[in-house]
Amino acid sequence: FAAFTVLTNIVLILNQSIISSDSGSVEHNIQERCGLNSLEALSGVVFDALVLSLGKQASSSTKEVGIACLVTWMRFYKALGGDVVLSGYTNAVAFLSKPILESKPGNGGNDFRLRMGGLCTVGECDEITEALLADFFTCKGEEVKRGLQSVIDASVKKHCNSAIVPQIDGLIATFILLLKCKSESDLSQSLKKVVMSGSSPITSKTSFLYSKAMIDATSTDVVVKTLLHKSIGLASSLGDELKSLVCLNSNGQPSAASYALAASIACPLK
Image 1 (cartoon, rainbow, N blue to C red):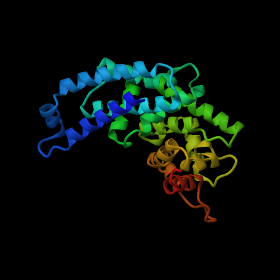
Image 2: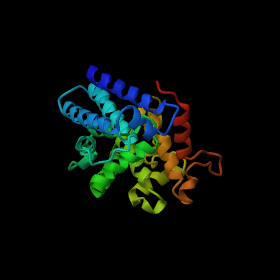
Image 3: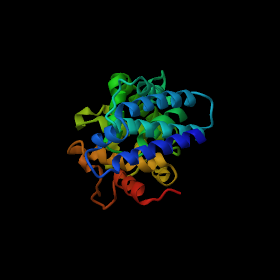
Image 4: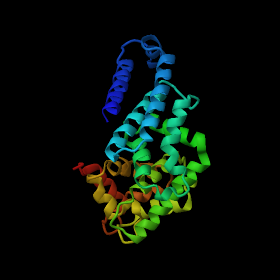
């Protein structure tokens, strides 16, 4: 736990040192002040060490800190302009994506949530997050897509069996797939059905994405707090039909998506 914390602090200091210079571009400052090749080599060593450590038995809280550290270094490496050719980085991508690629990813449970939830919530959700996720698809494109779809399908079934449990794995998978979609036509039929159920008021038929359990979790779970409103925003940008997600009906009732969006923005984490 202490080693993970120290490594995270080191990379944050390095990152701040690089971007705080007044002269020249970020790339120039990296090469002048730190040496790009040296930092890439250091990152490779850190990736291998972290993946090895995270593969050992540890408590969920220790793994959570370790994964946050790993993702922070991966973000730093991508900011340097690094790509998937570095073996340590490739090992890090393989480690985080393992729960997606297993035979029954919908049953990945805590492992999927820790790894992919950490990847999506550590740091800002920005172009670096998109670049990291793009590398997962670059390495194992169709397998990753099928695995994420399986997580969503499993969440749909679990929600039908018990609507009182928030399907956070399904939210993570939905967010990642929406981030990769360029238009409404890129959505699978099952994903579109999950997303489009938000255009009507909340009922027993509302999908797991806008369920009362998910909305309640916006004040208790950092993954839901971070990804729910972003998922709704991404979906709303994909086409005319999906623009109607956030709306009021003729009786003035908010749609399920509107209610979820308001809750995820307004409710502070407890």
